[in-house]
Image 1 (tube, rainbow, N blue to C red):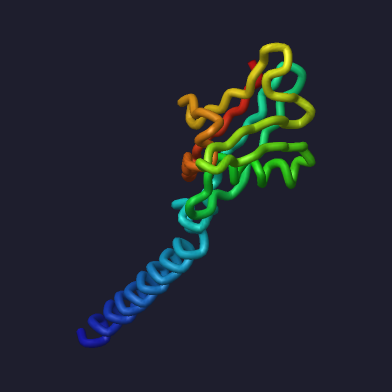
Image 2 (cartoon, one colour):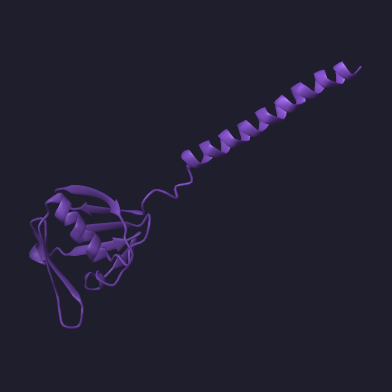
Length: 139
């Protein structure tokens, strides 16, 4: 009878070892393939939507990044000409973007952050966050 009990104890012990090993493997895979998005950078989108052209940029958002900062980064990587000034009061004046001049033929740049209109003078004050969408039009 004791041989029969020892026979059933060995597989049970082996099953416990196998179960512990499986739990360890699952835990390791969970750490290796973390799909929660915690390791992905914060990204924002910038769309320049003019009548004659449409350009799309996606980039990482850093702490305290403004809409003007995002536009400046897109300009540097996208080889776009940007001409602007900041006056004594801290207001931004965009004069030219990619060959389009503000105020010519009664057309002006319009800026949106997540479909909400933002005045050009405030581009250096509006903070950009993860998953934000900036759009620039010329109307």
